[in-house]
Amino acid sequence: MPHVAMPNADWADAFAIRTSSHAITPEMAAHKIMSNRPDWVVHLMRFRDLVVRPFGLKSGARDSTDPNIIGIFPIMARSENSITLGLDDKHLDFRLVVEVQHDSPDQTLIRTTTLTKRHNMFGRAYLATIMPFHRVIVPTMLKAAFPQ
Image (cartoon, rainbow, N blue to C red):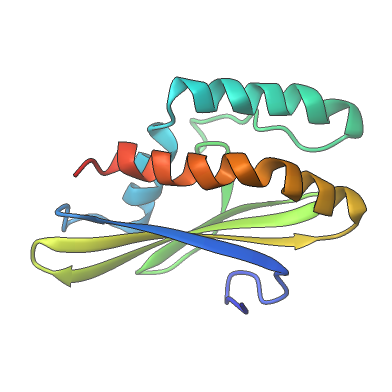
């Protein structure tokens, strides 16, 4: 499981989709993914922010005009083939790595890897609670961003 974006991660998953969009950069892919959130995902994230606010956790409320933020997540690192978004909080640290792999002139693989480092029992409980949603949300956002 070690990943350069978070070598100490204790949980990870990945989802991928193929697209014919060849001239796409990791940053463009991340913007497409984060800007194609279905309404139910937006509402779910707002609900999540309300629920975790009393616990002092960071919310998703961000200035989307900031060039160092994509969607609600700050950019942590960039390379030619990937961009890493993330947040560090008291319950867990989180990274979303969006990788672009140009397989052929008409085929590009877009892969998202989610990495977390849980710090305490609350981080473990939080991740267990959101996991069923995460496993639906990420593929849904990929399909919305890159329709077949």
